[in-house]
Amino acid sequence: MKVTPLDIRQKQFRTKFRGLDGKEVEAFLELIAAEFEEVIRENIALKDDLKRKVARLEEFHEREKTLQETMVTAQKITEDIKDSAKRQAEVIVGEAELQAEKIVQGAHTRLVQVLDEISELKRQRTQFEAQIRSAVESQLKLLEVFQAQPAPSPRIGENVEFLQKQPKKAGAAE
Image (tube, rainbow, N blue to C red; front, top):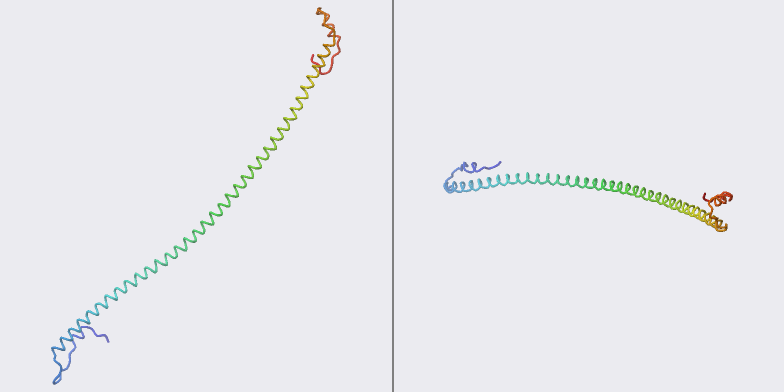
């Protein structure tokens, strides 16, 4: 059974011959009731404070749980982002390597074309030199033929007649 300050105040004692001083007992009981009342109020205040602190502690536990979940989620997202970035980097590197290979192959093809063109130009140069040499040689032979012949007479008709009698040579200019 709980004793309240009111129980203390209302407690009645029986009196006996040569019993206790009633006023002193009542004063003492009043003092104890007041002290008891103060202890109860303090106890209630402490219980309320404890309830608030327990509620606050629960709130902190919930926050902690939320923060832990958030951290786990953030770590997972970070890992996903890293993986995605790594895959993208691999794709970019692969595309760059492919493009570089195409550029190198194109440059090699162009080099082969340029070398072929140089060879063709050298062949054409050699052929042109041979044609020029042949033309110069035939002109020299023609010159030798003209120098070996007697000086033309001052008459024009005789010169034309002389030239018409000459045999035509292959490659000679007409």
